[in-house]
Image (cartoon, rainbow, N blue to C red; front, side, top):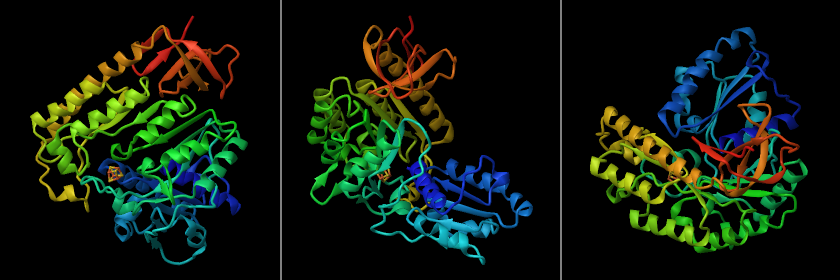
Length: 418
Ligand code: SF4
């Protein structure tokens, strides 16, 4: 979402005759688009600002801005510790960037949350590639107890379906062949009487799109209507779903306010596999949430064993001020969190390899992306179920849809070699 927001900002600036530079030393404007989901992300921005500070002595006209969730979260506090920052802009205030850049005087903090802002009518300046991100909804109403997003990005609101489809057409005209729909809870999309599956159906009509992906859905809003569209339009609607689990224990899920139980989640996985048996399923897991006992953690491992995810983003719980969980005692020690995380990662690696090896000998459809990092003689691409495949360059070009037989699997990569 931040990448998309940066593309929106880049579009606003480039329309006003700003150009991009490769190096901060040449810049008249430096905007850091930030994340507040974990403390680590905020710490990185603090040290980056420290590194950039000296550029202001070299170029007194340089404007330095902090944008995004950290700006929304810390507001004036950023200026207290870093008075050399010129602009602090929350995620709903990007339309005013040009006005703030023109202001000569004091630093500005603009962090109003606007109930309606979805950046309709602005077109992002996208980086070249095969995939265009398209934001379809913003904000979140779920209030998971550990998460700061509802406070930094406000309540859910969705874009007009017509304008999303127009943006998809425009992306194809610009040479993109894959689109990824974005939203904090992408499948909570709701515009008038249209829901998420109606939007996917509308996008299947856009000529030139080879794949449609989306991220991230909330398990609560995955329904049969959505899965039927997956089944009917595979692989155009990619057979991959990122289904955040966060924890396997019902006690922890309830404390997290995740709105589902382990049983409900596993039933959902069964339903997904009923409609799309070869759906690639990935997840997010947090270990060491306040009160998580070893027995609770074993429940998480149990779900992982049952589902066997293709991959998982795994995190140690990090308390975020302003959230409900911040008031809970962070009672799992760092050592215990680290041990649980290690165990989880080891298990996940086994599952990844298990799933990937099942594809050896099978023919898969690959959307060609770029040269492989390992060798200029090889290219890499992605299956519809979101697995990277490396294969000989041959006469293939980026954006081709090709079919190849899988010959090997190592780590998180499939290989198709002679
Ligand atoms: S669903 Fe939960 S984790 Fe996701 S953005 Fe909303 S509050 Fe945060």
